[in-house]
Image 1: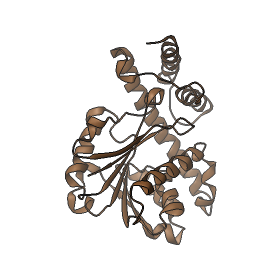
Image 2 (image 1 turned 180 degrees about the horizontal axis):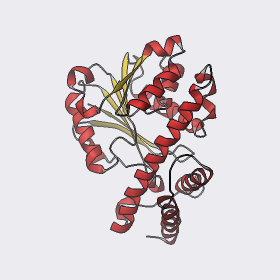
Image 3 (image 1 turned 120 degrees about the horizontal axis):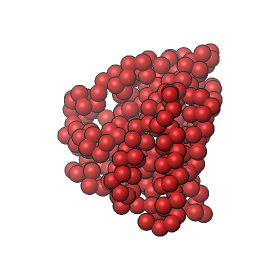
Length: 277
């Protein structure tokens, strides 16, 4: 590993040790500061891109990375629950989405996803899509439904009943979105082909399946139960960003035709993978 890569891993390791010793990952001044520093380190500007090869890291760093992703997932869930409660306290929650500190990232990410989707399936907007792992702040579904797919029905799947209850409250006051957005509290592994075959596009959130084996099992389940010709859009990570989110490799998508793998170099964190069954 080059000196730049070693320095990067050292900085991330230092932040990992600080984060792992926190009493709580609920939003606070210390928690917010540490994760902001981590995101900044893991998303270097285009002028100094990170060429770190995650697969070449030693086992100790791989273990640290795996633990860090889980800590990031826990902190992200707590942050989303916190802000979902704040947004729901407003009379019109959808008018205040920008209160969430990473809302602009969701705007950029969703625009990117729609652009990729529209490029590969430009003729007929999907009538029904599924978003797996929608969480307490289903920004991706809300933005996609309101800005890009105004006639599409969105089915949001999450295992956490409290997350779904909070998410549903955000759109309850909007006549259009409350009609087109459905929330299912279930593990996607329990959703069978009769349901999954209805969706022309399935979005898979980055943190559904944090370990490689889990992710592959979810993808395999979708392969067996999605409709032929349906599209699967996944969020992955590349370079230093892979310390924040799991990586999806081409070999993980057996049975799918990979249409594109896009790795952003701006403030968008997640890579985008689009595949067709």
